[in-house]
Length: 256
Image: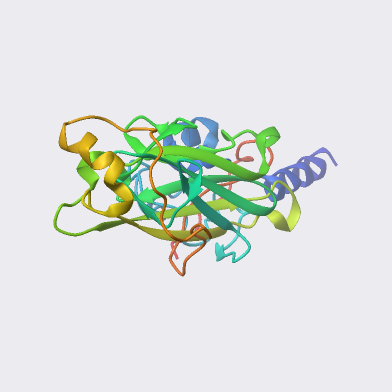
């Protein structure tokens, strides 16, 4: 009878186990919560060891995060970018910008950029010191789940190009905190980094030319006022749900 009760408790715990964004980018933390290879879990299913600043879930990881399922592209996720208070669709080297990520329901999320060093987030702080372009929206705290997050970032002068332009991809992986809302929902937006000579970046081009850092000075915004929204791109990781770390040991998942 006791063994049956224990088995039932184990099953319920397993079904309810979910992970925060931190479980994706901080593998040491994941291992400390009972998901280490020595505990019988197959870490080879992951695309990397957590050190890749641009990775995010691209499939189901049933042995680790059963509540999140297979990631899907969510057209209801919005991403709007602004500089000096005005919406923009291009980024300027040397300038500070904001990105507002919105969801149809309250979620936690992980926002990554590629290439990672093309963007340096300052608020909230980067999830890890070696990944300036990756942030944990909600700080991996269930109580901080929200339907909207705003982050501030700088485009380093080095990210600009005098002979052309480059791009940066913003990818968000999100999840709700209960039931079916826990399935990973993703979206991505690709923005161009304008060259320093571009008209919309005139106010900061001199700063970069003189070796200065980012500036908050008002700059002419791009002609578009719609902001950038989700693009048909592959997106990211994030995980929301109960604080309970992994349940008791379960046979490692098959690679898929």
